[in-house]
Image (cartoon, rainbow, N blue to C red):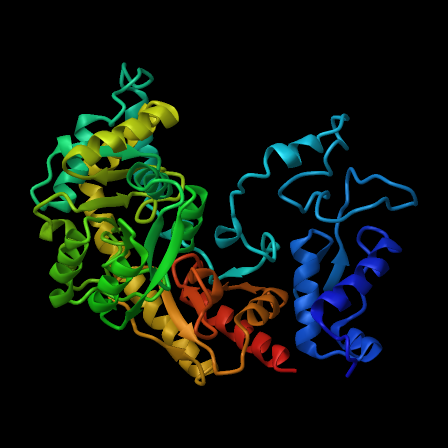
Length: 492
């Protein structure tokens, strides 16, 4: 093997080759690159992943790797110069100045004081090509969504004479009442503010509660969108480990003392990604530890309506007497991704802060969408949908676990969760989750590498595999079969 056989070196050589090719030209096969450059299969996989992230190549399962479109590039030579900007496959758009003219380089200096890190919530491999089977999705497949009920609710909402009028900044009272009844814990409509989905609720809560530069404690592992929202709010996410019973209270107390943090983000029920449920004896402890530290808890209860048929524990909010918990939930997961309706529930002065941040951001959430949510959740079909969804998720969860046991028995599934949309899987020691994800993409299946779910260094390789975004159980089994083939390829 070559002494300089790192992915970065090989990627540099391939960039030179790509500059000499035309859009759509096929790159040499992995086998040919291994032979020609004296590198390992892992090095080839990582190099191709780097080029795909830059928008220079696209991979087609079963076919190969091809030069991507580079519209709008400039420079001398037939293909022009290209680097970190440019090309149809780059979500950032074409090279600066290539479309509108002018010199925007001054913006680099003006924006140098901070950055918004989207890496936790974007796919480094780019959008999956058509035909890819999805084990990385965080929303329901269309076949699981209540599409007819949504269409009927939208039609009824649109017929309201005041459907397009302005509404209060904290949301429609009937919708706030729906969320208050759903969570219980003594909450009323006055304790609720409507948000544009769960991610907006996260961002609002973080900015309302914590000052820029402050520390925020997060579970380890945790939802990548929370890590991204915290960093966008100029907060420093610090990890607190979880085990099979959820967040560990004794380590939480130490983390508050050492960091000076005044905010904890956690998911006590069907945690994303592990599926853990916070043990009953820990629930009150967590609230008491935070209260003793003078800190708030942001409780993300995204999966309360995604149970698989068993009893769902009460939220932490039910344990809260003193306004420690800021609770959030959403309808986007149990209904449809574009029903961007969520809610924050809190007591005390923090509620006024939440309302203020929401008002400054965009005044109020779209009234027709709020009216649609009221119509949907008030109809008898909503309860039937949740029952049907619960059974379907339970069956899919079992089907995915069984397929993994049959095809890749060496991997460890942490638990069969009682709710949620994912399995948390640990590959064998020595396997690389990023390499596995890139190989899986080439075999026509997309998975989520576990390193995205840790605020600091991960303790080992993990994969989050979803069972709700696939069309059916047959597709889940085929996805695992492809994943097993990708694993064999990545092992060389």
